[in-house]
Length: 155
Image (cartoon, rainbow, N blue to C red; front, side, top):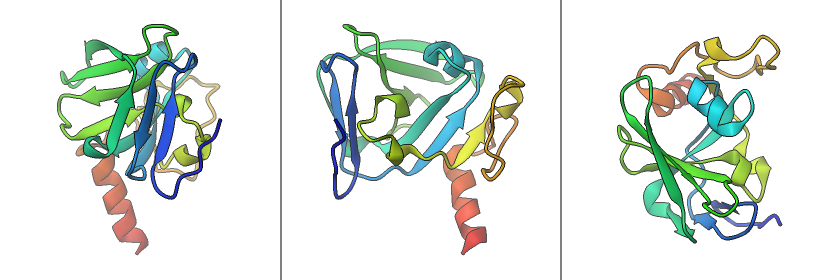
């Protein structure tokens, strides 16, 4: 059920009890191979969208599981309590930002990855796109700093 929008994106869970909409386009899209992303996704990585929290609205009940990341920051992973679909997460070190899961999007084309993080933890069989900026761990300053620097070099 892809929704075509002039700006932003939308998505939801498998059973339809949770829906979200962002009126802003993604700031950054990253693929993460950390252990937490692997375990919470059921595959070798997660693809996350970095989005402005003030442009993001959710309808339906979302339950959260809080877990410290390697950095010590608390990552709160939100999921549908009815079907278990991962919806979005927040990070205590990044107020004002939400991280919708690409797997929950109505239109997956919105989530073309722009970078890969924690590549050192990817399994040998993972196919990492060699054209993307790739980091063995989380780069200092996070994904937003890296993409800003990449944009400056490309300009």
